[in-house]
Length: 360
Ligand SMILES: [Zn+2]
Ligand SMILES: [Zn+2]
Image (cartoon, rainbow, N blue to C red; front, side):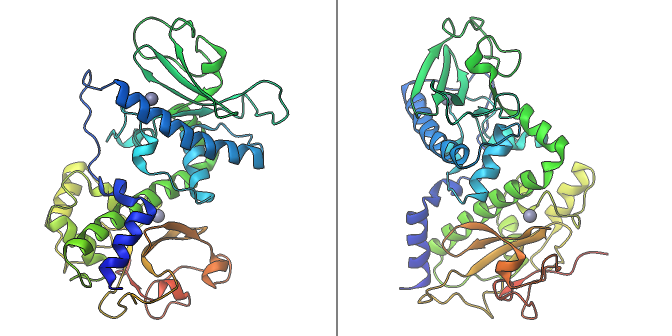
């Protein structure tokens, strides 16, 4: 089996096609759709998310605020794969939003139970609400822990006849009061769970970059022309990653990145060439494909890209398209050791990867 075949298979197996859609959906207010197709898609999403949430709460009842950040953290920690399009409802005006402070909200449309104010009771006799989609014109989808999905009208929910359906403490109905959306994310951040959401965003970046690499390998079989971070810079150059989408190259937990005014930042990305040092603009270590070609016959997963900016370990994109947090122990390193990429690295998975030195 040749390399590109392996990638194609990985795409099919992992359902990574959705990850290819790197361009966030541009939503113009008033133009969102809410037809039968959107609702059928939303039901499918709810079932997938509901199953993941249910298995998480049944294993160990959570006590934190739930919400989007909790859900994404659970998916990553439990290695449950849900494609980005399955996390977004077509009726959600914020799906795919580019507003930086709402990035997580743009990734996921669904409100999740707030376990801090409404603890989950595994022994309860009545079904408990786990997930809600409040974005539909005339009501909300409510999923309970028996995986039943009900569409509740505004009248049933005592909600106002127009405008967004409120959720959280001030909502009009108990089924809406017990769930949280973006406010839980902010709460969670305030409680110091920020690292987790940084890691979630970082893993989402790596999944998207993996999607680009897969598409490229299908189109141009053989090893990529560039190795190391220069490969990612070449995507900028060829406008596969377009102006305004550079955040996909930036890990939120990376302290080596240049942060400055938007105009200056845009200029630096524009002027970057595959030959220039990129460490202050690109967070990720990328495989040196010339020295470490991927063995198409290999049975073990090989690392393709990685983020070395997290205290808990390396976030690694593998050649089957999966993204995992690999902790120090699994990397073969002492706890807390600094992570290095390159042939001298003590971690086998990081040896084939290359990254520039951090800027002064
Ligand atoms: Zn929906
Ligand atoms: Zn990262």
